[in-house]
Image (cartoon, rainbow, N blue to C red; front, side):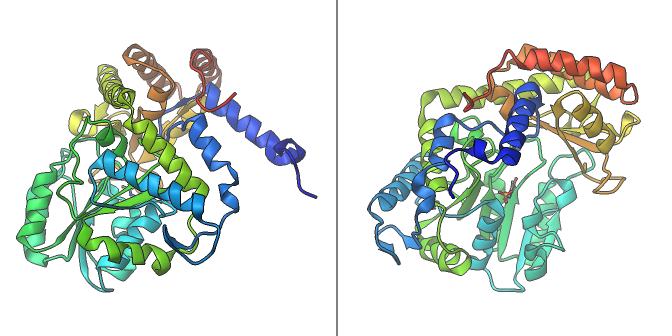
Length: 413
Ligand SMILES: *Cc1c(COP(=O)(O)O)cnc(C)c1O
């Protein structure tokens, strides 16, 4: 028997209802999360999931592709327009397989790559020793300076010394704007491929608030579910000369059938990002992050690099007598979701680090503004100061819930 509605699966339905309440009644500050639109969800939950379409538009292995080809072509055209890309592949299932496809396309096993060290703000797929990237390639990690700023002189020195075949300029816990031209110049000086992973900031770039590396980088990858506010997935953009190699690496190199419902969701999110009000959204994300950063500093918090240019804030808790894990737990207890994170030159361990990573994309989508960020900073300060006082945490949770109920949850009826 096929269910006609989710309600017929009680167990999953009830958990979904509970998760809806959690998302509605709490403040979402994980910088890689967002609330996607009802339109994107409609595409993701559509009958497109029934289709198999291995291959690319006009070159598929199965029949029945007339609508699928049109959808994928629209997604590609919109992404090209949004980022000024020469070539776009919209099939990657997510950011990690997309990065794997880029390496698979452009490198041989054992080749040298450079990427930001994980505990300094890089991503696992940028060469962490236990990941596929770290096991398959010779990785020269670069780092941040003790003040938290990226050490571009080190990038230049390491590139000269090790002559990497590819340099990854990608960041998952770094709060500052990137000097893309300098990365490009360093890559050029050693004949390396310049690869930007803009998964975190793509929405801020598409919304014209941060500089876009796409016009002059060889390859650019982004996820579509973070600041882009689309479905969970990724795209790879590249110069025409890499187009064939990248496409072949995605399919049949790494993936089978593309997720057509997700590709339709990507097309919808690109259409939303092409509207003028997406620029207002991107601008407000940064205004909110700066307001939250200032308010936290007023409460005595130390921030890595002392502030932010983006959607992201990294708190250094070493001066506050609380660990990242304890802070995350105290915030969970009051309905504020954030994540513990390493800080550059981490004195503790990755599973119990000294940092707390916050971001404003989701809160901004719900309509929160600068004044709301001050309230949120106050609750964060109170929750951390009262981490062992269950009744005080309960009181704060009530205040957070009442506050959140003023802001509708996008995509939910
Ligand atoms: C999130 C992220 C990824 C991976 O994306 P997944 O979809 O989680 O696999 C890759 N690179 C960077 C910089 C990221 O922030």
